[in-house]
Length: 189
Image 1 (cartoon, helix red, strand yellow):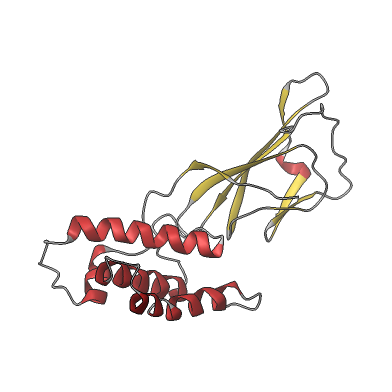
Image 2: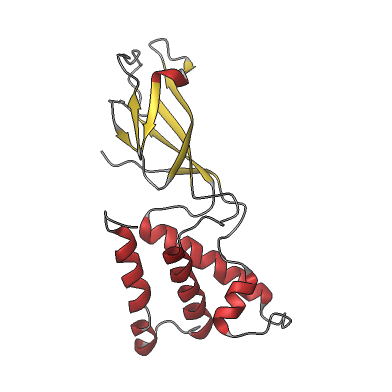
């Protein structure tokens, strides 16, 4: 079953600061000429990293909707910080909240608590809604170094290669791609 996460609340920060981006590009901290452009590149680099790794860096809230829920629903995006709520439409098509003591988060999956039984639901494509929080921290301070390094590479790449269709510029993406592959390994960190 393909679960498509819907963004409820996006991040309020980026894991890369303007001064980190300037240092990567060897631009003086007091030089404000490129600040607006760099802010956009930082956001684009975060979004690209999160897309490529199916992860979230700074706290964001997502939800998934499913027709049926069985024990062990693996949630898209990582790392999962917490489950905000689980709601379902009962047999009378009334929205109910599933009690938090009847399920638990296990790494990246929602599991039923010991000896719990799921309630009956009406037949709908969105009978269950699981809302959850993902990310390392609110401000990006706990984002792994490998992710920050990859995003800094992207910021530099975007800044230096405004015409990204050039064949030579595409070769500079190899180090970034290597970091994505390393991060996606099951054994990381």
